[in-house]
Image (cartoon, rainbow, N blue to C red):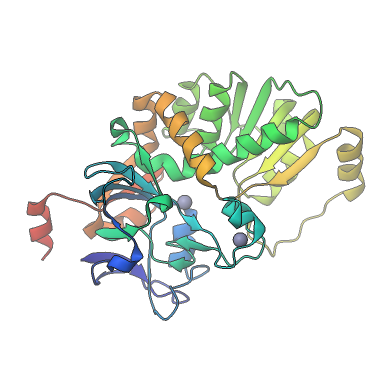
Length: 357
Ligand SMILES: [Zn+2]
Ligand SMILES: [Zn+2]
């Protein structure tokens, strides 16, 4: 079968290759990959900044954001042929640590977890994969066209869950939420904010393309000015850009008792001047909380499935700005200014498959 692979540590090694069918010992459920979403993590892996092959192998199948269809499942596992499933990206470490043992592998304490398509486990950009039933989640058949958005939705489902848990430290009645960055993660964070009945403001620099309308169609407000210039005092702020000046602003412009969640990952190495005294003063005198959030466990996949189910299907479809067949993967990785989420269609009809051979 075909798979989209990289040689970790080697730049621009992205290519399609033939690989063996998944071995039965990888699990009793056989899944046909339908689609794989691309994001910044994939770009970093292609750029050899990140990524680790499975032990003893010299290549890594790419693809962590995924949607598949069950081809074979033993009876009594709650899965049947034709079910739509999403593979859970991170798997517990082998020890396992206490967090992983409790099913909270997103909070793994020893760092020995593995992640499909990222760290030590093949990804989903291959025609078929196998896994144990607990390594996937079944989703509603109605989500066939947007189910590939599940994984990025789990990231914000976790962020919101953690915000609400932290909020329980005291009286918590948020009204205004701000999101910095109108990429897929920012837009999905905004969606979950509006689903909670909050007044949501999204900040990004682009004035063209689909993002402003996607924000407005959620009933949220789109801003191209900075947080400071908007004069907005958010009770909840979700930072999705990872850009240092935006992160710094996010630390400075929230309401009293606010909770700031950092989801965007910055690149280290750039120095900037920061008034630590001012930051400390604000943090202490405003009872502010700043925390980071990454990855997701099964509970967040369930919450994400519910959020997608409740969302307007047409709006979700608009998040997927381009779909590219696996054979044309290079086009999928090319930057288009109007891109929101680019998806590789892994499964194509048999006629298209023959064309490739
Ligand atoms: Zn991703
Ligand atoms: Zn662990």
